[in-house]
Image 1 (cartoon, helix red, strand yellow):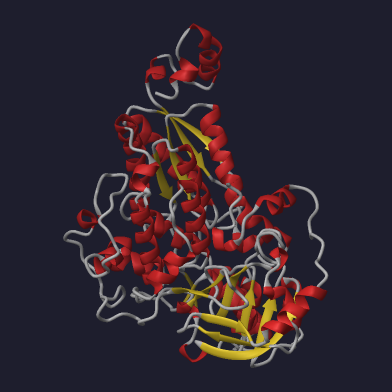
Image 2 (cartoon, rainbow, N blue to C red):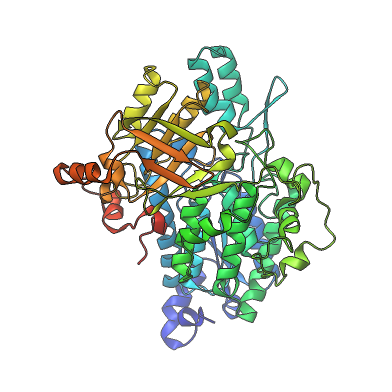
Length: 553
């Protein structure tokens, strides 16, 4: 065992003494040392219930014969970090989490890990660490939040708060209504209720095979989630015994299965960033071209909040991830029969299960023939840009408008709040990319404000930043190269026309190539926004969004 390095031999008397100081008995030195990488935090609603899940995992580890050690991992709540400088730390925290897990696991020579995660950047960060370490690992995602209700109307975090604020500012609801919705939108622990980034990544983790079946959609406060946590603790002992490692499970085939499922579900655009970063850690040849290729072959078979009124609880009741896989398996040739940590093939996971086809549609009766996500290319985004088609109204799939440019999210929000935005505008937010932000902030506040004002079909927003999984409307992000890396987005002028054609996967600045070259020769580059601290380090090492905005080389 790896842990023999710290517990066996005469020269390790000091090590053993220190370990016994933590409560380890002499008998347990024969057991595998298993870390529980817990992202528990009182600050993050998706993680506040993890103390109970830690106990369940710990019980499972000891039942299976291991010695458990809980250690902490940072967690950022994107909703709380939204709309201010805190959001700059959200995406960079993913790479920080990977570094933290790697550091603790290697410093203490742990034999295996149970990764306890839930929210947006924590799950991919932990997967990146698992692949980097390549020691036996099981991922437990803590589960979705229960739906909110106000006056018997179902609420989610996005519709009950961010979009409701826009409705209030537009005069469509009263302040009292807004305050009542705010109180009821988030009733307790768990990841926000829709198919936002947290739940998207939980679903894709289950598809790739690092989580047990049903882990992604089982509610945060359910007994089922507690059982899954316990079973994961037991299982990690078997993985260590049989030397089953993450790179045995996460392969190019399993990652392409995740892409297919992502497209079919209409997941968060952030999932593209995270899957690219995960592929980088695993040295698997997955690029934006895989998303672009598969997007022409996979229709959307379910529509969840923020694009509909259905939530993760509806998805779970209808069959969950295994239900979606049942509808896809054998119908999409590119979806292959990969295994999970339990050794089960997809064909075994979906055998004899019931699916509510009113919620998770069969492929011959999809929600739409379009995929949930798409990659666009053009002179604005020669390296690609990303759009969540499932959040775009049919009338807005082809759009031409006039550019209004802003060099930060705050500038754009001020314009929206001052009623300077009108039908036909294309709002361009730049210098918010991985390097320029730095940190590639989510633009949930402006997109929610636009939708809340009833302009979701009439106004487009494009950015080298990114969007929340809760974003809907004609919103195109991850424009690459970003402004700070010399992208054309920095050369757009107020009044320029921009054409967006989602069915043809195109986004173009309607300005001649000669004019673009002329603008580039006279352009004065901006100095970095942040010159010290973690964000400065991140900006100096990060790659573009088209490569996953990762700091791993």
